[in-house]
Length: 126
Image 1 (cartoon, one colour):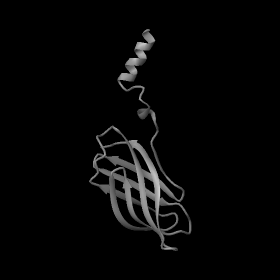
Image 2 (cartoon, rainbow, N blue to C red):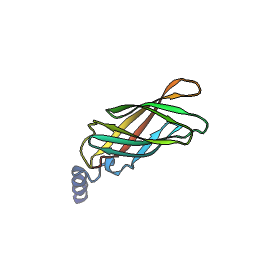
Image 3 (cartoon, rainbow, N blue to C red):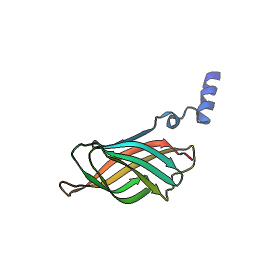
Image 4 (cartoon, helix red, strand yellow):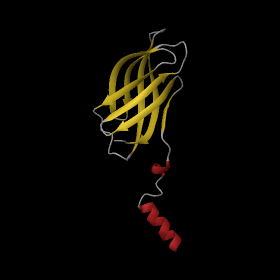
């Protein structure tokens, strides 16, 4: 009975919360690589790398959760760039953040517009 009471108390105060135990991750579909990220209450920063040699793309839009921005950044194979999204409403410092990511880009060789999807799990920093 004492053990059950202890487990119930730990669960009630969030010590056993799986959200606090999950690792941080920033993943895109193959071809794009998330080289780094930082989520703040009103801003999200992503470092995106074009991971396909010989393919040049132009990033047109980036969205994470409810935050988005428009860009016109060209990345050759192996190049990376930092994208900063402002005016976000991500939550408060120390909370967990989980957001779906969408990258709109154009392949230079074919001039086709495409969309890449990903997920971001992290904590909100100051």
